[in-house]
Length: 148
Image 1: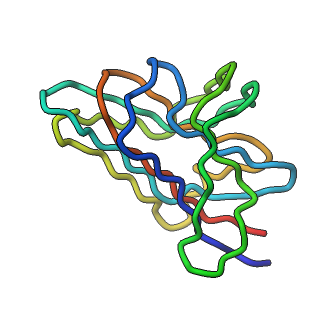
Image 2: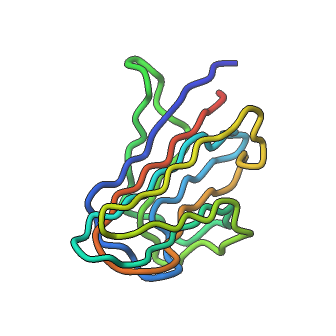
């Protein structure tokens, strides 16, 4: 079994509608991954409360705005996980795993998995970074360890 670390960054975008996904990772049949890092940050010039959240989600309809995951090391095989930024019908959100409050005026929130943090694993399903509060320009990153 091989293991690779992959990243799906999204920079300088306008926060989507509250309740819409910022980035959704979609694992296909028998794909297994552990979420290991999440970052969101504000890029505004005024103080505004913002909130994002990480949660498992059911499949949405017709994912779009694909991000091509990049390997942490040169030469990694392509990721088996798809990353989308838009949906014609949003995925249905599950329980919140990581609430992420931050300030639009240069604030940010960073989360990194602890040892054996299996609560953030997903197989044959979705892991969503969803927008929860506020409006303005922001940046986000999801990183995961994939077994293939």
